[in-house]
Image 1 (cartoon, one colour):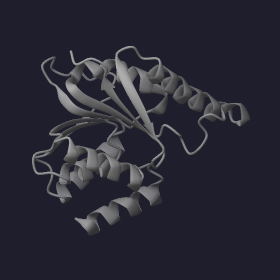
Image 2: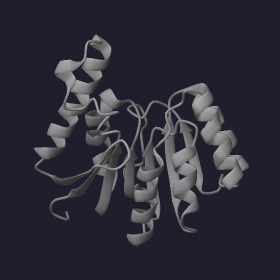
Image 3: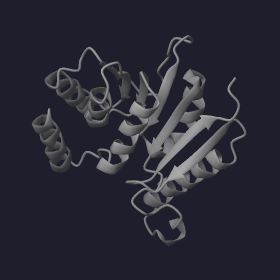
Image 4: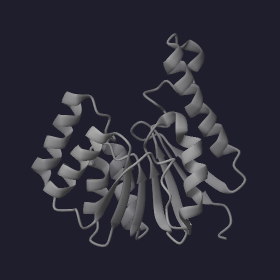
Length: 198
């Protein structure tokens, strides 16, 4: 498994595919173990790196992961199979905003790590699939240190993206339904839980 993970890391670097930082995935894996997380929904598979690590940290973890990019989806499928985790990880090829999940599905953990500009939409769509004591974790809250400094950014596209992440952070801070903690780990993580167990 270790060797396969190194190969995935090398591929990501070579092809410029963003994968989760090691400190961030270590934090999530620790959370999975400590809170006995079993069912995970991941928005944004990329090439399967985070899903593979989450699935391998406990025997009874099952993951549904959604990816809209065909090349990354195919690579994710291949990596999941190579690691022998195809019974624990279900990879869905679709835009996460178009996926229709069965209304009775509930997850212990929802991990958002897809199109940064859509974070609020992902959160609003998938919160209904979170268990009462579940958690929504979002990655890249700092976005390489740009967040909080959007006024200094010259590139229009980058500035727009950073502002969307800043808006998402404000959305979390002002949310009436969820309590959110922010962690200065890796590229920044937010951890949101229901305020009142419904």
